[in-house]
Length: 381
Image (cartoon, rainbow, N blue to C red; front, top):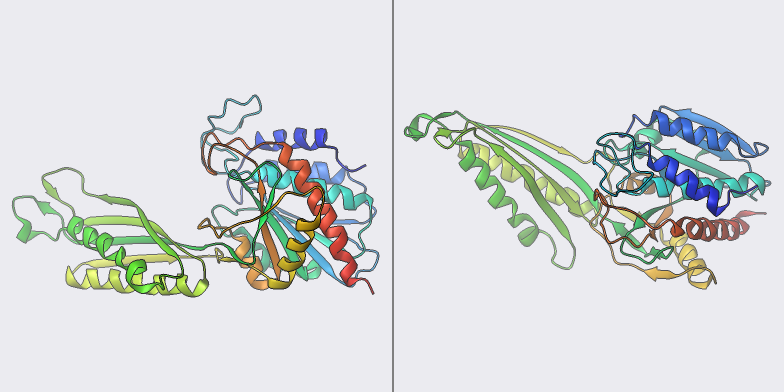
């Protein structure tokens, strides 16, 4: 039997209690496998890669494969929700709602495990969305090759949308991101003798100031980009000149072209500061698999059309967001669509108080079972 709403909520609460950091989701993987292996197995094939799980549902007419991806990792956040089923793992929390994501995927899978789909379905339970480009790692491992989707779907929960509402748009849904890690190395010394030292507080401050010109004077104002430097560490006390400054931040852009443009300018500015202050520079710009989430025109048109017409769906056309998601890498390889699922929380994603409304689960399951059932008809000869 397909999993009921009561069963799904119980599963979500179990998963919520065992959050794990990317590539260390061993308990989560074991719990997911336990649930999946209780489903009817007639049409299912299961494969593991590290902490990932791939489930292939054999279609009656296996001429086409539709993919569905969920992420499974948590965050290094100490939960402060006060829920009776709060995290049992100290300093770990499903503060981004991946417990909701997994539960919806299990609900959809439970239906198609019982009702054989017309075409193949590949369910991807992917690790390390938050910290290690898990989608890119999984794709490049080759584990997906024999079950490679022809198109693919995924969602992210959204605390700002009504419970169970589906949000989507054509084009870019989420920004591409890139980490900035810059270290300036000079010479420390006594505050009274600046000529005998090379002050990296001043060098770092110049870097921070100049970075603020990148978006305002390089990115087309009709488009969007963000450069935030959220960490600056230098020095030990007020009367010692610091010989080292460590600065960390992030780039966000709605197109890969603008992301690369901003990266180029960061490199030039950093190199210029190092040259002008005669200091050593160590610069790491790490994008990994966090490309912009750019929805495919054809799949997204079909998705939006279905969701607008479905009687049980509250569809909302959304604006782009500067949040990052490694599903962008998979969408750069496989045409597909990402969407929002509303969970109506007063607290934001990544908050230690984040508590999504569980009524969204069955609505998400129902909407995607309906869409996937309809979408399959396009590919049956």
